[in-house]
Amino acid sequence: MNIQTLKMDVVTLNAFLQREFPQWNSETGSQVMDVTADGVICRLPFNDSQLRPGGTVSGPTMMGLADSAMYAAVLSRIGPVALAVTTNLNINFMRKPEPRAIVATRRILKLGKRLAIGDVSIVSEGDTDLVAHATVTYSIPPQR
Amino acid sequence: MNIQTLKMDVVTLNAFLQREFPQWNSETGSQVMDVTADGVICRLPFNDSQLRPGGTVSGPTMMGLADSAMYAAVLSRIGPVALAVTTNLNINFMRKPEPRAIVATRRILKLGKRLAIGDVSIVSEGDTDLVAHATVTYSIPPQR
Amino acid sequence: MNIQTLKMDVVTLNAFLQREFPQWNSETGSQVMDVTADGVICRLPFNDSQLRPGGTVSGPTMMGLADSAMYAAVLSRIGPVALAVTTNLNINFMRKPEPRAIVATRRILKLGKRLAIGDVSIVSEGDTDLVAHATVTYSIPPQR
Amino acid sequence: MNIQTLKMDVVTLNAFLQREFPQWNSETGSQVMDVTADGVICRLPFNDSQLRPGGTVSGPTMMGLADSAMYAAVLSRIGPVALAVTTNLNINFMRKPEPRAIVATRRILKLGKRLAIGDVSIVSEGDTDLVAHATVTYSIPPQR
Image (cartoon, rainbow over the protein chains, first blue to last red):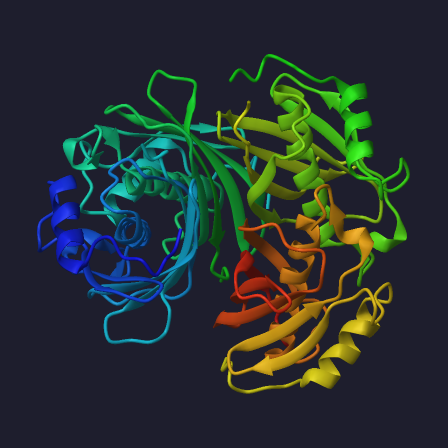
């Protein structure tokens, strides 16, 4: 598959994700900000439930953003296939993020028929230093 | 360090974790069920906010349990050191978990002065088939 | 698939691996020592080309053993499918191994139609402390 | 630490690596080709011992290059510290590499006092499609 061919844009991606994850709303869920040449950029607003001791954003919060950014990146290229599933996620935590929004820049590294692999760089909004970096593998269901 | 020497038991671990994570309460947070010869067993009760499309427990929910089970396992051996931080988490998702409680069995594989490494097997409560398996590395702050 | 159903035993596995990897011979290649209830045990003899500064066995040597032990474990259950390929390998190095043979105990954690996942514990022969622990994912080609 | 401050250049890096790894010579070992703004570029020449069934370069060969490229990138910034050790390596294999030289582009993602983290993109020489992508963590010994 070709990562240059887009099947969903920012608006349709956000609409699809919000329909799929009814618990999310625009205040607590991650939003696709941009569809880029090789992936997407997603933003997760800050709220108190993400806090860990020390006043930093929790690891699972970052993992959730890494995962949903990969999902959005794959969907933007293959279309609204609700059944794509994460099979592997590897994340390195580098700095303690400030208690504010985090932004994930996702690159698709491979988009095959059965597997998609990408990596994601996460920063606190407005910063350049990485707070986390993750690699994610998605299994793509056979297309009819 | 010796993984056989215990510094915290089930009751003190749960009290410490609940104090550290004030968002958690006994209904939504994971609980340490047992401190074992080489780790701990933790249980995360089910609630609707964990659901993903298809009626399964979300990936970030399992990642959160894998992470907190590692934290509990390390604390049980080194004592209440609030500043230990996850540096790496690698998780493989194997089956879609049923919408019910999940249970994590954590083994400590190495407990060094600076790094602790463990793996965790996650099942739906009452099942034996793995829904996920994770390896987690913790950085331990220098002890005074 | 069922990990209890064996399709290859120790002798046929070693014969197949040696045919597939002609560079290997009984002195330098890993050998399957046992096919266990949930995986295999493999042994890699020591030779000087594995050495790293400090007199320890190199990381790539351990990675190679982790990989071939996973391959052997999958083959023992699905039969001689030469085209199964590693898609992901995650390894944690825990102690510097002595300059002697290393032994890998491989567990299959999931054996699906398309993906197999296992973990492997590596020790220096005769020791119990882990020198490395790895998780490996194999992609299984569609069976005709 | 600052990844912009270089302590070793291409020539001193290659000299140090060759001294440390006496098994390597200019025909079989990886060479640092360039020290870049955020890492290094390394090249591993092809030889028959790297072959796997199907005529592709083996996984352990790519893992070895990923590992040594990270080592070179860290050394270029911290100087010739022979005792830095890999603690974690996560690699995704994406395409079967042709039987020719492979080239690794290494980015340092974090360079802390105790840990360095980087990722590496591996291609067959002359290609742009990734054959593998790896994330590597190094533990840096305390400096006197």
